[in-house]
Amino acid sequence: MIALIGLTNALFLWPFFFTNAWLGWEPPIELPTGTNLTIVLSGSVLASASNILFMLAAVLASPFFLAVGQVLQIPLSILSDLGLHGEMMTLVQGLGCALIVVGFVVQVVSDYKSEREKTDRID
Amino acid sequence: MRDETSREPLLHENECNEINELDPAELKEFATAAPLSARETGDELPLTDKKKCFTCACLVGNILVLLFQMVTVANAELMQIQETGTHPYLHPYFSVWFNHCVTGVFSAIIAAIWLAVTKQSFMGVLRENGFSTFCQAFWTATGFAVFIMFNIFWSVSLPLVTVSVFTTITQTTCVFVLVFSIIFFKHAVRALEVVSVLFCIGGVVIISFLKIDPDSSNNGTANTSTIGAFLSEADNPSNSLVGIACVVAFTVLQAAYLVVWGWRFSEKRTKASKR
Image (cartoon, rainbow over the protein chains, first blue to last red):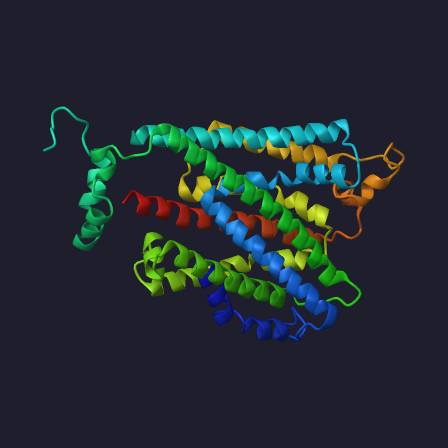
């Protein structure tokens, strides 16, 4: 389905380059060159990974689980700061992270309970 | 011969109703695909295995979510470099369109490999996902392709706000996902889900509104880091109102897309696999 989305995107949405330029929302289309080309290509690879992971995670887990999981980005950033810059977190940051992690764990428990109820109903 | 008096019914009433609603072709498919083997022969997975499966799915989901987060942050940083660097390339629509095309190419390659490995047919997978014809799948994909252009707000907003403000606002996606699920799909809210959202938003609010003293033990290095970037953003002149409005639009549309995508594919998949 994601491949089909890419195909229909390529087929149907290119005319908007010209309408956007005509409306003045975006400069007339010019292909990136040099450094910009490298950045655009790297960005598109990352964006592809992001889009594919986004849609897979929404189906394999659940949209709500993914949305709650997004919040984990903050504790992850703090951990990366700790690892990369050697920065210790403050008490308030620690409290915030603890709340986020607890929220995520509560969501995991909620999902587990919901799944167990479903399997119990089948049994 | 099956003893009707001594055993549990093969199918529950609601399952019988579902089967009664099937047309002859679907009924034939059902009979071929699921010859009542599960309960009849006792081949169904034991509960412990089901729990293991759920734990695996949960783990895979967690890993995907974490990977998604890392890739998204890296991508946002790169997009900012692209649009605010020394030679900025300011074509947000083209960038998003190109990204989606590349996503399509990568997905097509992955799908082709997957189909070859699992020896499934393309139409078989479409049918499994609730599409009876290719055209139906094609037009549904077109709808999603238009919908996913909400990423244009992501592209437009990044040069107008800092990545930290962007990240902080997008953390509220879970609230919108919950609200949309309740309003449009009559999702029965569990108390634990509300508690989970409250905890997460509470954590985000605490971290977003705290300030670090530059003369602290970190010698001011905190403000150059990821967490330091979350701070004092209200006073940052690089955040414009239009940018913040775009981030909010992105967050709301992303939540709506998540709900619709999850509803369309998770539910259909469940129904198809039930059959």
